[in-house]
Image 1 (tube, rainbow, N blue to C red):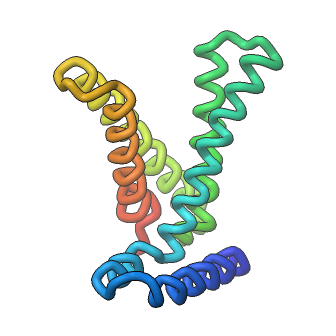
Image 2 (spheres, rainbow, N blue to C red):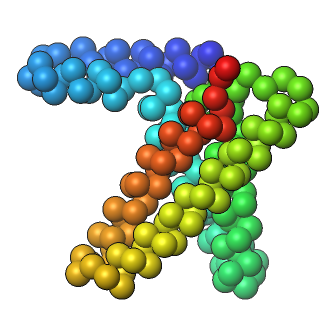
Length: 162
């Protein structure tokens, strides 16, 4: 785990060094705030989670001819479990040791994901029905909101260090 974090920090330092030469000071300050190891790893594993979700769905649907909704449910479960384990160990450095602590943390993570799923469903429904914004723009907007909410829920609720 430390190797991954060290490589990530080296990459961030490299990017910041280049940025110092091309970006104005204000933009560089914002970039420094956004380019933490935690955020970069969260984004990286979030992209992998999405690829696992889509890949699993495609494999189950098109290779094994599983029914559409069942393939989607299995893909989502696998993706959320992948997100839990990568976030737990590589992004937020879980300190849970006892079985009770681990189960509590897992429950909080799943509760957070259930909450943001409701936010996504309700948000998309409202944006599709109420606004004049194109569907895909609405979906992308809500998805970005959900990603940000998931980050803060994981950081300050599910994997919170006492």
